Figure 1 (cartoon, rainbow, N blue to C red):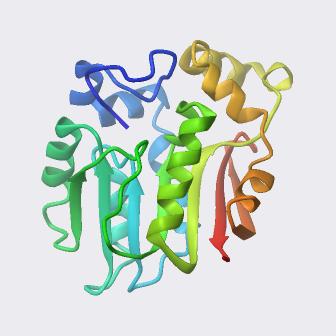
Figure 2: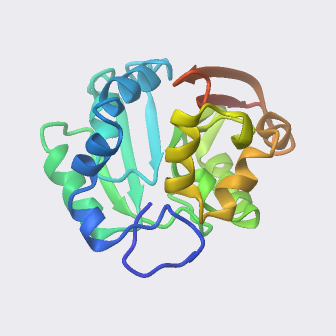
Length: 222
């Protein structure tokens, strides 16, 4: 999620104008080239079906949406939502060859209703950057837009103790998230338990980067 006006000063999910402009390049550099193979594996693990309708919360530049589109038939769809007009420009340029991808300038941290149901909701390194009371709103938005049996797909940090993680991961994490109290709060929660309280179940997990990152899939069962 990105915006020039910081709505959550203690969060790192809101980006500066420079970062907005060069987002994909900066991610590639910061990850030493590891992001591309990682995100491909994570999206493959979503088990996208040809006719899936997917909502991408905090879609950014559209890189992830373009990867998802490769699994879709013409009957499938990805709707990318982001607060940033700049990200929308990136999205539309990057995804122009995929007619079944669309961008909507939409805040996911406030209640909204698109009037449609989807098979999957996807969030990539967005959820951890909000206060818990705002995460409640985001989860309600996901529930509202998922059909029964649809899945919420949260790609984010796994649950771990920062102090016991290897130095090669602990230092970058502290650099990226050290000032974000929400990220530290996110690590301490049992997200399968939290999601079960919202009517999700039948969880599936895929771990990456030696267990520090996770795709958590949760089915809407109520």
